[in-house]
Length: 72
Image (cartoon, rainbow, N blue to C red; front, side, top):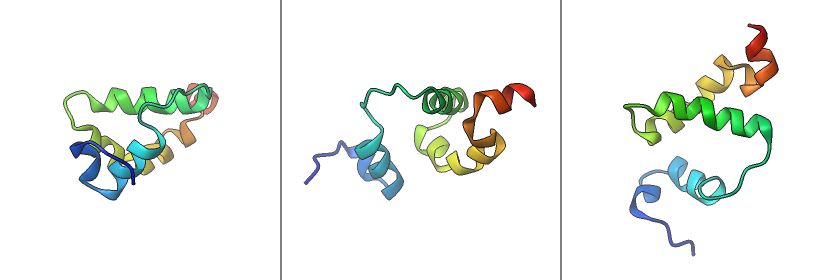
């Protein structure tokens, strides 16, 4: 059983985020770009809301591919 903090128990999405993303070192440039983009949207919003909108942002940011975003 995973011992999650209270915020990570509020939804299946937050549980998955905590279990697979939170606190893990990231070295993949595309994943780092994704997290940077999402963090920019977080300003003034809850992280849970931003994470919930992640799939829409994934489409809007062309799969969080920095080269594609730079060309648009």
